[in-house]
Image (cartoon, rainbow, N blue to C red; front, side, top):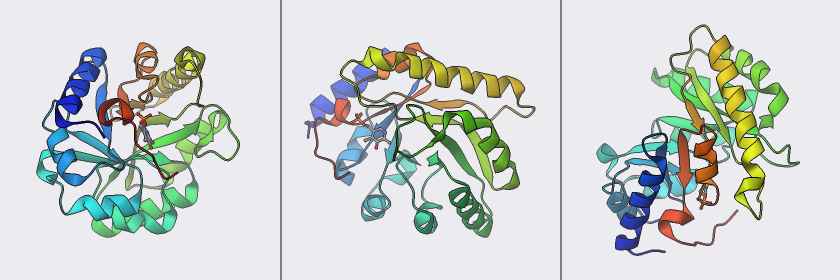
Length: 226
Ligand SMILES: *Cc1c(COP(=O)(O)O)cnc(C)c1O
């Protein structure tokens, strides 16, 4: 894990690279709460957790009034109830049963949950996300759920040696994001393209991503349970 000084420096570098074009989300898996509380004072106050259990363990110790918390990992239907009142956006909606459960839990609390549709842009077997070709049909199906507010798309492209190898995926998802915005009647909330991580955020931004999710670039190499 990086030192506080390194974390601050890396966040500043990321913000410079983003240059106002993309929001910088800190992917905080394995980062202790007190370090997250520090990190959100360094120029971006947006964090993303990707495991329900970990978010719950840290939740009480987080300076919640100083940060915005998104859920970015794969979400099991039976765990929606634990996070529904703790996050302001879920990046990983990729099935109707999951959407249905978010609808149920959000309705129960009288809230509307902002969601992104996760697209399996590399068509990788066994990976989360809906097939690229089904993006619009899936979005239409979400209209059935009034307590979900679809705000855009999220992708995790295949792991590659060189970030340039994923440029075409970033271009493809940006085009889909724009196509939908053009066609959608009520598109004022359709505003988020969550693409790009530590290894490829510059490429993602160059292709129109407006939200990058950075873990190791900011906090250093960590070993993740996958
Ligand atoms: C961990 C994680 C990231 C950040 O990954 P890095 O390569 O460490 O920047 C981004 N998105 C999701 C969904 C993650 O789980």
